[in-house]
Length: 196
Image 1 (cartoon, helix red, strand yellow):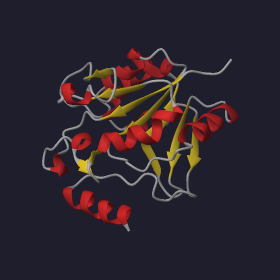
Image 2 (tube, helix red, strand yellow):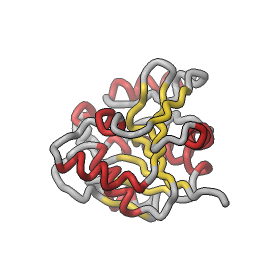
Image 3 (tube, one colour):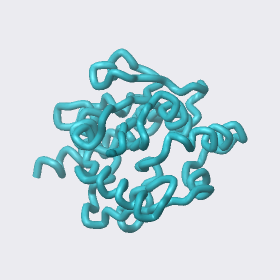
């Protein structure tokens, strides 16, 4: 029996460094940033969910399930993850940010293999040097743990996952896979790099 794996794309932040523009909808090479992420992960999962706290009507063109955080107030990525875990029927949930347009096309396969091999609760991607805490594959059954962590006023993802058995998966062979775009200047730089 194969496991069902869904993905949630986190697009729920305030994007302060992007001048308040909704990062997932900022264009990169003529397409919204979120569309690049979807193109990379869609073949790897059963269903894509989008966590967005604004512009949900615009995001609805990209996924059937678009939702805001259960708790209002822009509490960070964990709030979107908690909500997504309550909406999926999957055995595993892939979490990725909307501002990573170059995600690995073998992300799920490698993370699922590590999760199983290490009998871990979640797998976190690494670029070979740094962990990428908002790129993870986790069991939706961790929802109660994450909810309790948030209820205690905590917000740092890596502090939460340190409480669980974690498989760190290196993608050092794809050093640009987790380039994320936070400013208009970075959009321009990445556009140039991708067209060279």
